[in-house]
Length: 95
Image (cartoon, rainbow, N blue to C red; front, side, top):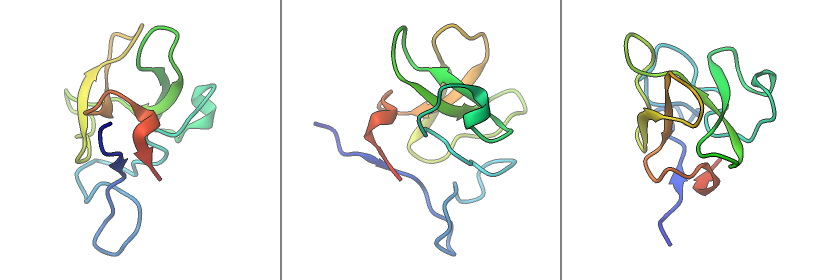
C-alpha cells in the first residue's frame, strides 16, 4: 500500500501549498457532492467513472500550479485539467 499523501503546509504551519498557487488551495481533495461543497477556485470532480467526487482546482494554462504530491491531469468527463494526487487517489490524502 502506498504512503498517504499529506497536504502541504506553509512555513507558518498553515494548510496550503507553500505559495505554489495563485490562491488558497482550499479543500483540495476533500469529498464533495457539488461544486458548492468546494471553495470558489475549485470544482467537484470524479477522478474516474463512477468514482468518489473530490474538490480540485483547474491547473495549467495560466491557472494554478499544483502543490507537491499532486499533478495536473485529466479527470473523468471534463475537458479542463485539474490537480489530482500523483497516486490518482484522493482517499489516501491525510488532512
